[in-house]
Image 1 (cartoon, rainbow, N blue to C red):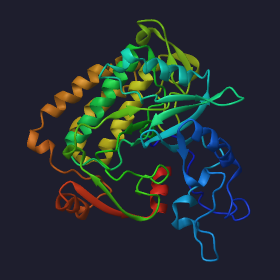
Image 2 (image 1 turned 45 degrees about the vertical axis):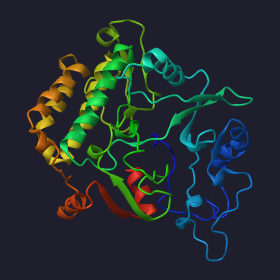
Image 3 (image 1 turned 60 degrees about the horizontal axis):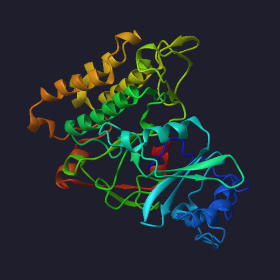
Image 4 (image 1 turned 90 degrees about the vertical axis):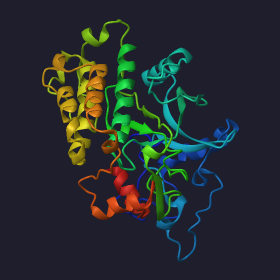
Length: 372
């Protein structure tokens, strides 16, 4: 996975005194202290967090910008990547509290019976690690990347992604849960078939954390790809079977998208309708970026109606999406589309590489794009 608010980035200005070139930041020492404990539990962090780590760029001509272990965590980092030693699977460890609402909701949604529902697009909870001598815990989650990176190649890829997220939102609402923070950074996808060589957690447009050619495959040329929601910090859970129609809450939700017009710190509103609005904004932004997706704009517009109770349910929006998709000839749905930031040469590249599109990115480019 590639989680929201990872806190893993390079600051715009690097200050030698504040960030010692041959040392680790204070905020990273939490993970350094946990390194032996996590090894005993079967998880290994990157070499930088080993207590015995020696910077690979040591020396008079060393440059931390050119090596993988030069990527560091910021002070407030809550997540980090690791390898599960039993099978080599890449995972993400997220700091939380043993009694946190997020962990309770993750456990609820990962109940085997709920996990069997194909509409369950919640990130899997692989393990929970109670931290020694504290009320903290680590949630062990699969590695993923943001759902819209690499860019969409054709309309059918967009339809598949939005279909899964609408299904997933309907599942959440049926189970009395509103997400509360639906935004691209909380919407991930698996990358094993799309990026066969994998990507670096902190620099997701590189394979190993250093500059080079980053290669990926068209989604429509791969087996079915899984999309899922992450980050339930802002989520609410209701017991009433009719909660999606009767629940009330106050506050503002999310950091990455606009709040709906009814959001208020004092006047109660229905939080389930906020989810629909926020996912509508995600769709709207994609449509704005890809002119060929204009046919789907009415779907997003309905989800963003000013009257929250005039907004459709996720299931109704899914049906609307499929009606629009079915109006497009199948051959046309597979034609390449381009974003407003993409030119003719990029479209030609996608065709020439026949499903394997290569682009050259520096690590700084990848980190800059991650922070946008």
